[in-house]
Amino acid sequence: MIVKMYTGSMVYGTALPESDTDIKEIFQPEACDIIMMQARHHYTKTTRKNREGGNTKDDVDLEGFSLSKFLEMVAEGQTIALDMLFTPHNFYLETSPIWAYIQKNKDRLISRQATAFVGYCRTQAKKYQVKAERVDLLHEILALLGSLPKKERLENIPQITALASNGYIEVCNRKCLLTFTVEKAVEIYETALTIYGQRVLAAASNGHDYKSLYHAVRVAREAEELLTTGRISFPRPEAPLLLAIRRKEKSYEEICGIIDEGLLRVEGALLKTTLPEHPDLEFTHNVVFEENFREVRSLTPKFTRK
Image (cartoon, rainbow, N blue to C red):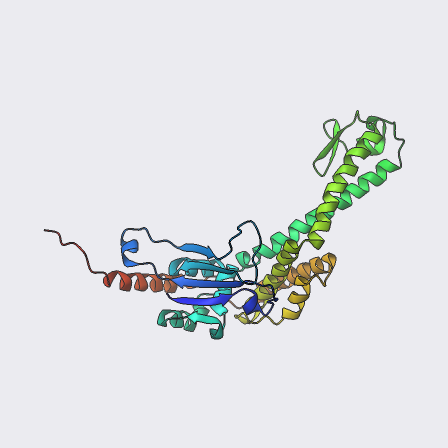
């Protein structure tokens, strides 16, 4: 074991009474697995009995990474690895001299490769913005159709034919042939509005989506701090805001605005950061080589060739 630590909301300062426990660890593969090229580099374990349901306060999720996998993730700027790299000592369950060495040299591991770090944030923002944009488009087309005679065919209406291509109009993947009546088109797009409208409402009220948005805000703030100062602070300075989001005390629209602002700030930090363009890959390769070599040298062969 190289290091074992608490992670997640306990470290962020956003744990709720019902929060589960997250633990991450970094391990050195065993010598025989290294030699036989069978070393595993990742595993997960959970105490959750119902795999379909959510975690409870009594559940523990454990995730482990090999040393080489962890250093690779840090080099890529992945959130999990960077969070682990900057987790304070008081959250450690086990540690080792090699982890102390990595901590001492963490400035050689970080760089401006923050694309992966903010990728989650961008994905979340885009996902919910697209839903909202589709609803707006449906409202616009329905407003236009509502001003037209119900029995009129779409092909006889200049405002509609101007939007047409290949004999139909298409809004939010819903096609209406120009031979359809206005009444038929209204029926199709009102159905689509009901579906998309429910999805947007779900994004604003569903606990899972709120949790995703909460993480998107956190990741953007962490990325900005890393690019600006070269470190990530725990517990998070914006923990009160994150808790308000987790408790659904912020509206969906307000959270989206916070995410958009966060992304702009990260883009600005990327332009000004003094972090190196790339991590010191020679250093990471040497760390992995030395630890693998030390592990292999400790192995005593069971058989002697005659």
